[in-house]
Length: 274
Ligand code: PAF
Image 1 (spheres, rainbow, N blue to C red):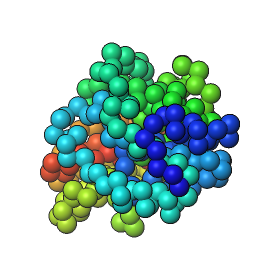
Image 2: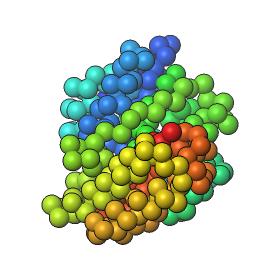
Image 3: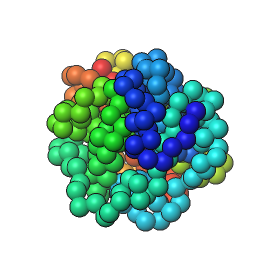
Image 4: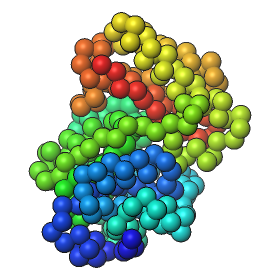
């Protein structure tokens, strides 16, 4: 594995080989490594980007607190089979204060977009820059961020980036908690509270398998489980898997998404239903 910090160096390493990009903000866990596994199946030149993108944080404190450990990440990336680790400085990514933002209307507006002002503009902008600077043939995103996946797919399509976007399943702890870099901030007690999110989603998925199609009923199961566990619910929403538009019935591929605060830690999770 080679570690580089400029777009030009990534392109020099990938050459004309159709590469697969795994975009990350670092502090890697099994979830990221599962994205790498998918990337290695579709390409023999795998690039991982590692950049904590200030544009997508709506709270300055959250950006400062975001866990970082380049040495640990580089070791994990290498053992996972990454060929090129792109870890740019803020100056490489944003040489001047960027005047341009990529806004993906509609897809970005509900759920995370409604609770985190400017978040998806920041995500779409940095991902567009990664696509333009690296020119991957494939890019792998986790389904845990289901709305982000919908935003990125729409952005790539609207801007004609010649990249195939691949969604990869959420990886969970054995108790059901979805893996997240933020889980390191959960104390022992917080962890059992956090299980309200996955517990509620699993109960809703079970109900859907049993024939429940009503969005309000499914959302209610999640809301009740999260509240009973002691977390502060932000939303439980059923949405179209591709447009991220909130919908009332399971009549196509949808995801049921939840966001809640466990103490100071904000967590999101979802299940795909169809
Ligand atoms: O999902 C993430 O880690 C980030 O939102 C991404 C896609 C790397 C953009 O900064």
